[in-house]
Length: 303
Ligand code: KIV
Image (cartoon, rainbow, N blue to C red; front, side, top):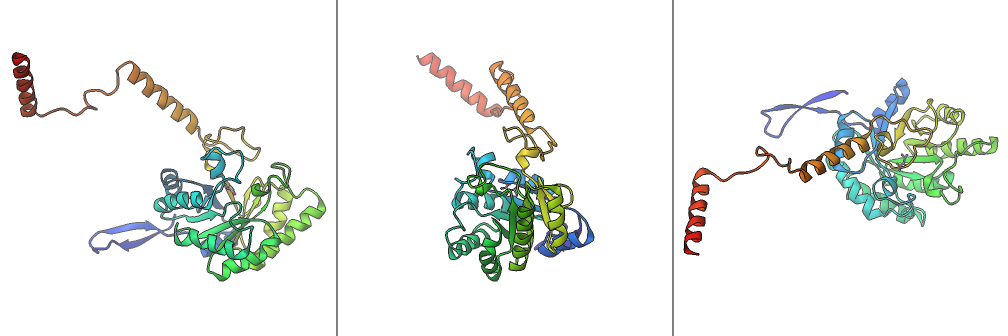
């Protein structure tokens, strides 16, 4: 992590603050062949841990709908819910770029509404960019967002908001025609102003060709190792998503086991009166205790 010196407001205490990830620093990583690391986060606590671990991009994904809110797909999550969670993430993150995912229905109706909703993420929630799903049909929106100073991450391939059209979550780009389509979409989105493209659920060979064709970075999820960066859903990474992991998920930890063990131990301690201990309890001072005991004994004598 590169660090820059700055002085706090009173100038007396020098402090060290990590330098922020920017569009330029992401682009530099692509040019230098240094992989970009991205993860989702949806709340203050996890966003803080993810940021402090040195991740480059934090996406407040609409996967929030599934992994945090318990819906079957990403479609039900609303603008207000996404804004609420993006704000929490923003408060936690000091270094990574914070990207807000535009929820289904917030940009498909018309371009004006899409721009107005995207602006809310920057203005009300402090996001630095928005992500939208879809190919060349989003070119006009991407141009308008870019003109409105709203950086755009595009998302191609298996786009979860198209779950019904795709007849489920299926790997995309498997025929030569579909591959040409994807490459054309990626180039169109780059030309329209997108600064990064997420490639989800496509064969490695296709992601490799798109990554080579684009000047802007590609971030893969289920798209093989040749993308310029990789993203996963945090809850998949730490076993908190309650569903069998997709082929592309690697579990790096078991938060479910950690939480379950902790809660079982707490329950046992409470039921067996081992919690709280003396050290975990507050006590009256000597004088207050004496006064209380005296009052209680007077009360007993009167009765
Ligand atoms: O919502 C999401 O989590 C995503 C992925 C790219 C991880 O869109």
